Length: 393
Image 1 (cartoon, helix red, strand yellow):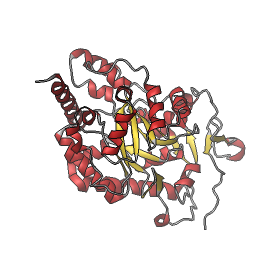
Image 2 (image 1 turned 90 degrees about the vertical axis):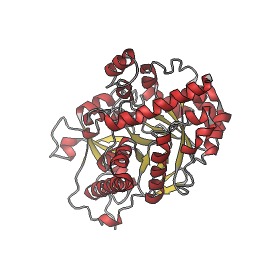
Image 3 (image 1 turned 180 degrees about the vertical axis):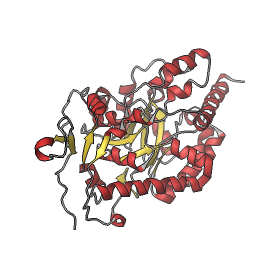
């Protein structure tokens, strides 16, 4: 057997293990780790809008989504991925949401494995995102990356950042030099927008600014609070990998904090990492995101109930979003993005790590003077726009 075939089999086995572990083991952090619960909305008892007339549509990659939702890339390069990805693509087409494919590393190294990624025939109208790790982007170069995008007729290319997962894996990458320059080169070379996504550890202010400076179109924060890939790796491999994965299982920046770090730097924002409900997606949008991304909930819904489970999950997310919009008097997502939110103390302490400190997109209201019901020490933050909201007609 050639060394190339051995390497392909190693990737396939690892991807298969990852899916099985995500379905069978506890791979998520506690819900509070994302700090999304520290984002609270200001209730409007007289919303004066019709719940069914609320516009949840969102433009994304030149396409119009019916919901601000992305099925984040999760798997590829093994036989089971073909079935999973086809079902997800059909869902994206059926419900008007976006879809990311899993890492195309297996396809890069063996083009015969491309069938699990060629999903356009199942989702001709969906926003589709190609995907490869930063180290593989650096090593492959812009031409090869462009061929991956073209091969699946993608609307954008996503570079995923996963140094924490790689450093835990005994077989993982160790040299991350040159990745920023490689991302800059594909921003210049590719005919489609470039998204950069973390994979469960979030984006710091420094990284968010570096990526903004090179012209990345979207930042997908993928913070702590959802699937922990260091935790996943702690369930497989040799003892040394398991030990390090366990110690780093809670590593990372909470999703809500990473959203604050990413705001107002230029690139548009995708909120992911611990997004489990439409309420979570609404919180992400209120902090400045265009849409929310989820992976594990879709994987588990498909495993337990097939396509019916996937549709039920999307319907539940839509119900949540409509409820939040109604209760904040938000007629559409732009209004939801402007609605005031209260940030809890732990999230504010993370926000203080941003050198910008007082976020220019936020207006801190004088709570005791303007809102006597809010006690001193609370902070009410209006995420852009005016408050109170302008009545709708």
